[in-house]
Length: 112
Image (cartoon, rainbow, N blue to C red; front, side, top):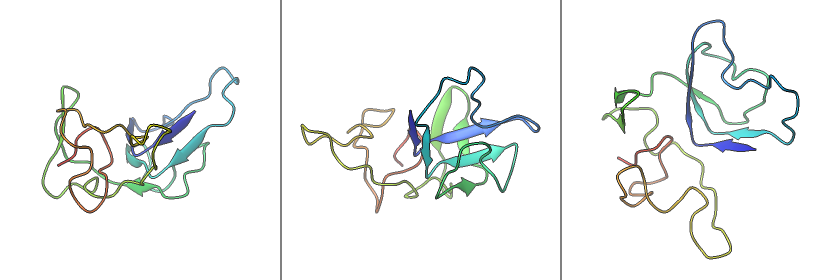
């Protein structure tokens, strides 16, 4: 399982990513934005490029658009392309607009 360029929220005292069944192998985290539980550690799984802070979402959980000034803007990790040439992160964002419009891909579902 690969979790990259996502916004992860957890309440204080909870894990951002939990392996409760013990059957998750090959879990890879990278360049995620963590908000809530900790401001210094993503938890049990290493993330070589973690970011911590308020993602400044417009109205979660229903409105996942990032607001101006969000640390998610242009902060994602380029994931390359699949065999057909499409970006591994998908070619479109939550609004079906181009997935990359700035310097880099945004973290989260919305490309501002």
